[in-house]
Image 1 (cartoon, rainbow, N blue to C red):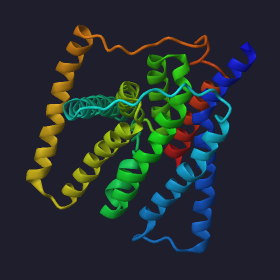
Image 2 (image 1 turned 30 degrees about the horizontal axis):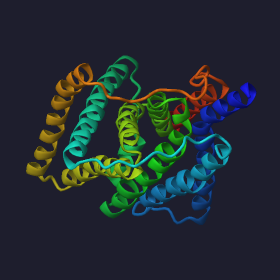
Image 3 (image 1 turned 60 degrees about the vertical axis):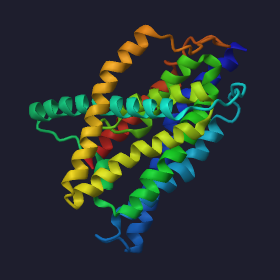
Image 4 (image 1 turned 180 degrees about the vertical axis):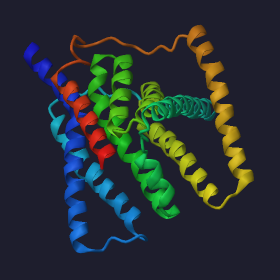
Amino acid sequence: MEKELMKQKRKLGLSDGILLISAYAVSILLSFIVGKMNILNDSNKYIILYVINAVSLYGVGFPMLKLLLRKVEVAEPQEKKKLGIGKFLIIFVVMVGATQFVNFVTQIILMIIQALTGHIVDNSVTELVQNSNPVANIIFAVVLAPIFEELMMRGTLMKRLRVYGDKTAIIYTALAFGLFHGNINQIPFTIACGLVLGYTLVKTNNIKYTILLHIMLNSIAVILTLLMQYELIIPIFGILVFILASILFTVIYLPIRLATRKQNIPNESKYDRKKLFINFGSIFTVMVVILLSVIEAII
């Protein structure tokens, strides 16, 4: 039993790494095929990149994740709970505030690193969104990415982690969600996002809420990018005010909430949590993320 449990923990750790490696290999193959077909030009290169990323991550990476975790025990399904509009909006504001605050701190750190080393840390995702047409952004960034990422992280991985306790599952999945993005610009704020989404899933046992929250968060970036392209100052100002207000609300509200009210998130573990976070699988995934980040920086 102990050997089988350790095997399951390694598979959980390997999941992100296997997903990323398989997706990266397929993206290289598809990029090679597209290059040989000589169809790439300035007008279609970003939408083709979107398609390659979608096929690689969702068409190949996701099935690989399901295949790897197919025999890993799934937590017993729990009753779905409704989330009132007021609570939903509070969660959304906290998610916006937390992610943007963390992103702000991350960018300051990266600017310091750039000033000290002279090396610019590019954000390929931001570049993709800024250079793609609105329809492509809506299809891939606003719709497909939230749906598939939630099915992968909260729908597949987290279901198997809840046997180790809900708090543990929230933290582990948030870390995996950050590593999944494989970009130092994105990892910190996607971890913050993953914590909020994991909390929401645990409180509702309903993935539709996390998908909707994810869609709404991604929509802000896409809408803001579109507004900036057309230089629509008033709505841009409105969104920036909302983001700033969300940060202030989160910085004030969240510590008070955590200090004065119990969150009632159970963490009873069916199995020993020893070596759940640190094992060959998780170390392998971290090394894969570092390697792919270095390759992206060099290329």
